[in-house]
Image (tube, rainbow over all chains, first blue to last red; front, top):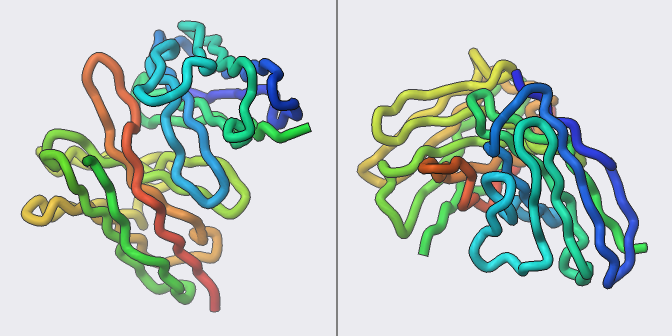
Length: 107
Length: 120
């Protein structure tokens, strides 16, 4: 199975900061990598798909980069509504797997 | 608009079974697969598996073979997840998610989640 390792596991930042979260795959997954945002008690919501594509309706301060095994989610100019947990997710092939999550907290 | 609406919370005893539903609205049900994702309390997301809503063909994650069963009723645009021989560690929030699979593959719409609690 393809393992996804996210770092860091948690992150503290202030409104207006820029942050990056990385996701490393145990084997190449081309660009079959998505990023989800999840708030407590809610379903995840896709923010970036296919490594670099911004989902409709998601603010442009979110961006994704990478291919192969190394990927990054960057959020520039953090807003209060961005504080949540973020998961990477590979769909290169079943079994689909998720990273362990990165909790983004307000400093 | 596209919506996935799941059945309500369940409280079950160890050894019992549970069947939760995921009803789709706003699109042709058999055009997109349905995936199931589990989230234990305070933990991350785990892929339970998926079902092809056109063929009914399921795929299960390694940890979910045997006691977990996917099914469909396409006449009412509904997918089901049945879990048998429930254990305390099955306590979790279970989500269904629509699989958009074209040039890219992602889970583009999610249900609200169904909490399954297993306790004696």
